[in-house]
Length: 293
Ligand code: C5P
View 1 (cartoon, protein in one colour):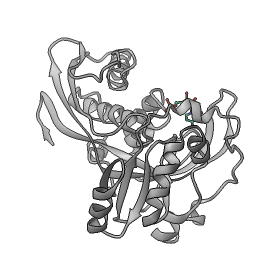
View 2 (view 1 turned 135 degrees about the vertical axis):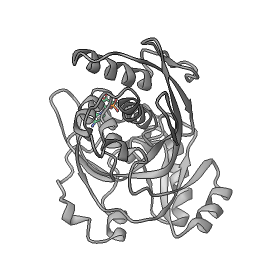
View 3 (view 1 turned 60 degrees about the vertical axis):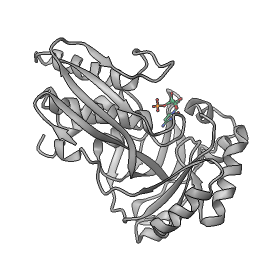
View 4 (view 1 turned 90 degrees about the vertical axis):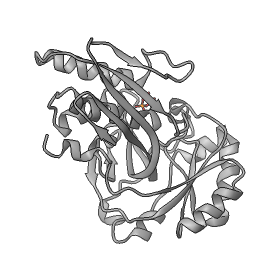
């Protein structure tokens, strides 16, 4: 990563996987109450931010079919601008470029992670001076997963995903497979057959060691996603040959813990769909930018 007064280049927006994801209730506004462990991976999108001398936010290589109004990075930048304006600070602009690796509708938090990286990087580049907690509050306006990436630590998440407690995580290798389907999150959460009353768990229930955490619980969204998108079940069953394979988030990607990089390479090479290997991250690579904020 290169940081200067006018640019921050090569920022990683890491993927996340949900080691488990339980739906424990529903709010009056329809949002679901979750309990989940979010794990950061060392693989993801790469973002560049360049200061502009006007106040415009320009995404130089947007994904086809994603207009600026719905582009989560552009929305993140505008939200930060608005916050600075409200505080009487001078507004600046920026050009954003994203090298996309993470599939959309994959449950890896791609769009959310891009938005969080945008908030953290621009908070620094624009000298907005917001604290981590203030940025997390802004992040929640962009989506339920975004606060986790701003939080920057592997975490036990509750509420809709915004109540976060850091948890210790092991160094480990994972393989992630991407069935060729984009899953719209609202479709999974609104399904009639979704389990919404899983029992509440406590950190002590799964934190005794890394293996216990890996094998703990389940993903309550998986059964619904596999019913609506059978290819997810097919790919997960293929991956089951190598260990406990689960879906992440609302899908479509599935993941499996592997012993080491060698085993990861073997699985990736023989996978029937697009596949990646990734190592766990202890912390978000940009988290240090907020340590003194
Ligand atoms: O917050 P985000 O934009 O990621 O959520 C997309 C949709 O998924 C929401 O509009 C909502 O329908 C559903 N959702 C939910 N409960 C959550 C997170 C998301 O019902 N905790």
